[in-house]
Image 1 (cartoon, rainbow, N blue to C red):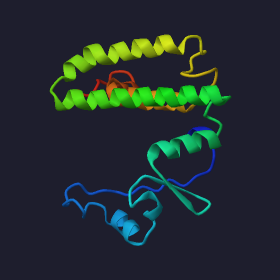
Image 2: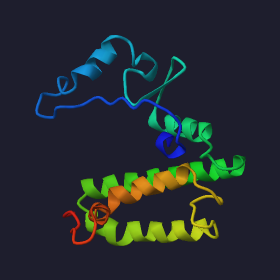
Image 3: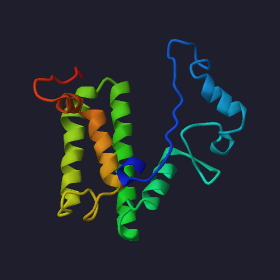
Length: 168
């Protein structure tokens, strides 16, 4: 959201070494927990620090940033529609996880996902290419990331002509 808005920000990430045992994979994260940097987020990530105040929980962070940079709709009703879209997307993500855990991935990909996308398109109606309203919003960013997660062919598209999609 910050990059999309053009606003200045600092993106700090904790690098993980998955070859190490749990608890030793990311010493800088362990250090941040120990020095109290993550206290206000209950010692978890992600966090957003604004004017010395730490905010936790990814959904709270994304809604705060969307409001701050003007990507949370043009009125309260659009903001509520953006929230509803995000909750529908979260429901679908949960269904996806359930499908994977129950060995029903094929049914998810051939029935559930296409049905959800068709409903989403119908609900969007005449929004001039946006998920909610007539301008880019948090919902569009959420849809973009959702599509990237579920359609690996996007990577081949981004690489250009002749590239092949990743195996799914």
